[in-house]
Amino acid sequence: MSAARHVAIIMDGNGRWAKRRHLPRAMGHRKGVEAVRALVRALKTIELECLTLYAFSSENWKRPEDEVDDLMDLMRRFIKSDLPEFIEHDVRLKIIGNWQALAPDIVEMLEDALRQTENGTRTLAVALNYGAQAEIVEAARKAAAAGEITERSLAAHLYTADLPPLDLLIRTSGEVRLSNFLLWQSAYAEMLFTDVLWPDFTPAHLLDALEHFAVRERRFGGR
Ligand code: FPP
Image (cartoon, rainbow, N blue to C red; front, side, top):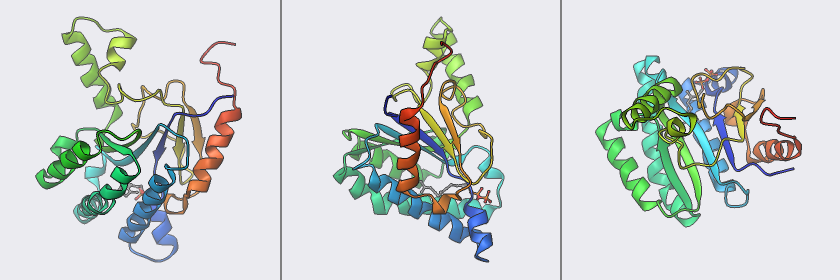
């Protein structure tokens, strides 16, 4: 029995949460940010080295422009309002994905947030403009340029190279697929697919998932 060190979450279902309440999709995303905030706050009492959240995929650009703008605005506001708490609670922010391609003001904001939180002991990794296949291709290129393509050398060039191995991947809202998220890192991860819509996901759900993880026996291909 061992505790999870690294959990990743595909936060899905904001749109359906809003639709069920006859609210605009934007409200679903707003409630989704509140769920993120509650989880980050809970990190101070939950023993976890790293929480990785899929906030914006490289495919999400295909959504209507006003929804993309809305998500970007939520990101700006979230960083601005919650950065002091990250610092206070020893949370190191990490961004994975091609985030340098985001709007210049967001890039600047994120760079500043990364600097200010670099000494945090727990990591909140946020995937922004992230796609796992592109990540693997880029890592393979770098490994090849360094003269050696092995599992180890490739993994060393992934965004997650400095994070603990992924133990548990959770997806909310009942969809059962990985949607180009952490494909390499999921090789031995446990998977949990829950019907709970992301805005309804609470720290209690995470604690429950961690408890179940701790009693599962992982074999990594052995017996
Ligand atoms: C999926 O819901 C969710 C997203 C595409 C974005 C996730 C973003 C947030 C929770 C807010 C921003 C995050 C941070 C860290 C500030 P969906 O719209 O695909 O839902 P649906 O499948 O029900 O339509």
